[in-house]
Amino acid sequence: MKKIIISLILFTSTISAQYTDITIVKEVKVKNKGVVISAHPLASEAGARILKMGGNAYDAIVATQYALAVVYPQAGNIGGGGFLVGVKNSGEKFSLDYRETAPSRASHDMYIDKSGKANTDLSQNGRLAVGVPGSVAGFFATLKYCKLPMEQLIQPAIDLAEKGFAITLQEADLLNSNKEIFERYNKTGIAFVKNVPWKTGDLLIQKELAETLKHIQKFGQKGFYEGKTAELIVAEMKKENGIISSEDLRNYKAVERKALEFDYKGNQIVSMPLPSSGGILLAQMLKMASYENLEKYQQNSARAVQIMVEAERRAYADRAEYMGDPDFIRDKTTYLISDEYLKNRWKSFSFTTATPSSAVGKIITQPKESTETTHISVIDKYGNAAAVTTTLNGLYGSKVVVSGAGFFLNNEMDDFSIKPGVPNMFGAVGGEANSVQPNKRMLSSMTPTIILKTGKPYMIVGTPGGTTIPTSVYQSIVNVIDFKLNANLSVNAPKFHHQWLPETVAFEKNFPETTIKDMEKLGYKAEQWGQIGRTEMILIDDEGNIHAVADGRGDDSVAVE
Ligand code: DON
Image (cartoon, rainbow, N blue to C red; front, side):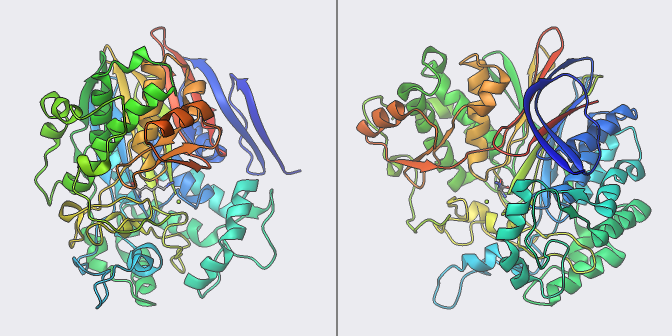
């Protein structure tokens, strides 16, 4: 019997993992046990099983990412890239950057046609949209912090791909609504397309992907970046306009970077540095709002939202102008997050009216267009913490599946600023700092974050959502630290988003009407959005009690060791 249960009740124990019985656990309270939260119950369980086998948080997060590549194909991936932020129980902090890179044959104007028009279809769909995948290199770079061998960490994913698993309603709907576009970009059959519509409980079996994972299990990192898998990726490129070469794959390297650290009201925030804008934006927004003593106001009241929106406006204007791959541009992080700079930037804030976006940044106007990523939060019983956000960029990335290898390739090239002022699929604009250059990493918004109190993990948080990632993480943090909400209320509270351009403020559909009306009176243009963010939060109190919450907006689920 296949059953899918959605549970909103508090569970305090682990759940059994059978690939046809799926239980979604939204909230858990435990002590002295490891916890994994991810976008899919089977992936969280794969991580929790690794903890049970003696693995630490880093083992668990690798196993969960591999499993997500199978059970959450819209965003979980081996054909994309991601970032890991880690804090070991020794206090050591680190970040791993396994962001995709532009292929060596990429060029500054590769998405601009002869008439000077930017072609976002090419940066968003099909083979030319694909950046050199970084995830598998990232998993191998993580091994340095792991206890168990890769052969073991990849096994749950192999089993899931080989035996198949029952899909949820959300997955069935997504696969059905993308059938046509899958067929457009994949001329040979793929596991994700079948003749009759997908329905809840159907088994998704991925034989080709299972073989690819076994190949990585046998040959290590080279099992992806060289040999058979690499050849299949390059052959896929050649079917159309793709430009990733075997050298690009062989040369790809994950990079260990110093995590971005700053203090917020006595809490030590550890987040992702460039090439993600996430950590810088978070620091800028938290600090600017603190100049108005945000904690004095009520959560989601007009005053609180106004302060936060104006902080977002100034931070995102800086994103567009100054942020990009630190190996290619002058890295101004220290200056951009300094109180000296931010206090000056905050001087133009006024409660009486909305600040026009043109007053805080140089606007090059172009019209806007209209999403998938996924976050994992882990704590183990030894006190090691890990946060990963990983992505294919759009839903199912470029929609191209590597024939013979069975996985989706990203469409991360769209995160570059393909032409100054032309919005990407998240409406983000940029300039030279984030222009396309061979081997460069495209600017990201992913914000995997760990917060420490007196040196010990207090919060592990992150979310998908493109440019809404930093603003969602920002709200989740102030909801707990400033507005004293618990993890559940913080994650599931209605959210809002502003990003300098467009000038509008987006509100989730259940956002308090009175706040929106009051904001409109001050000159803010409101827009209603369906959902913002899918946040996974772990809170650990002074006594070591763990409160883990998976966002109610999706199939996201908590698993306990
Ligand atoms: O790196 C980034 O910022 C984007 N590629 C993330 C995309 C994303 O979050 C889509 N998910 N909903």
